[in-house]
Image 1 (cartoon, rainbow, N blue to C red):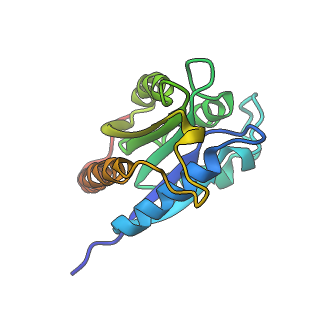
Image 2 (image 1 turned 90 degrees about the vertical axis):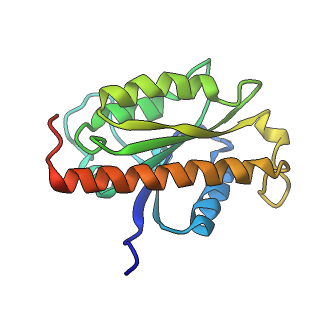
Length: 186
C-alpha cells in the first residue's frame, strides 16, 4: 500500500516587482514533482493581502492552506542581509499552522546566495514551533545561475534539491505520525 503524498506548501517569500522568485519556484516545483511523494501548493506572498495590523481580516484562506500542509519550503531572496518584510508579515500572522511541521529553505541572492536570510529565518521558525531541516538549496549570484530555459546551469542544484526533498519527506512523515499519536503541546 502506497503512502499518501506529503502536502507541501511552497512559500514564495518575495513580493517585489521584477522579482526572480518565479524562476526559482518553478524549478523547485519541478524538482519536487520529479522526486515524487509530494502534493504541491504554491503560496505566494505577492498574492496574499494581509494588513500589518493583525486583526484577522483576510487570513482565513491562507490559514487553511498553511494548516493543510504537512511540510513547508520557503523560497526566499536575501534583502539587506535578511529576508523580505512581506515574508515576515505572513509568518507572524499565523501560529498553530506551523506547529510540529518541517521547514526547508531554497534561497537565492548575491554573493551569499540568500543564506543570511535563511539563518535569520531559522530562529523565527523555532519560535513558531516548526522544525527546520539542515539541507538547503542556495543560488549565489542568481541572475547568472539559470539558463534561458529556467534551469540552473550547475547540475549540482538537482543533487542539493534531492537531498533537501529526501530529508523533508522523512521529517514530514515522522512528524505527521507523531501528531497522530499525541497532540503537540504548544
